[in-house]
Length: 129
Image (cartoon, rainbow, N blue to C red; front, side, top):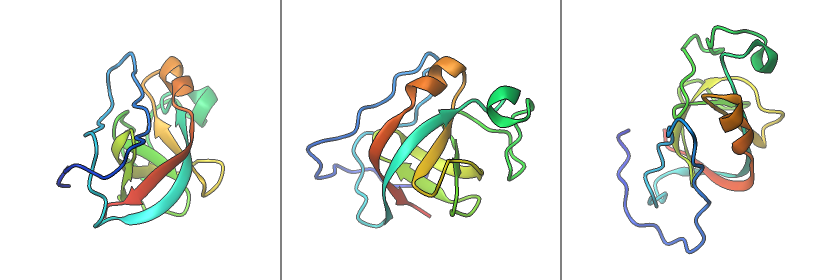
């Protein structure tokens, strides 16, 4: 991650998801003034190695990478490789397709338990690069 983190002027940060795997890359408050605001998105989880959740069990994303919790998101309308800052969660890279619509971002999770704990509505998101 090459983004510079500085104190932001937010008084109401989104909650950080605590997971059994401990995989979250939340850097704390970030100065988003140089980023492109995407808007408020619904954040959901998916388990990439589960054939029930994803239709395959190899964990390979639509872009050809191996999905990694703490890095991989699935988003419609954003190019593969786009880095997105998700407030309260951290920096993620679009490596998969999914999400119910352009208003939803699916976040790769390490387990079903973690997957079900990643549901938030109205989370501010920005394109970093």
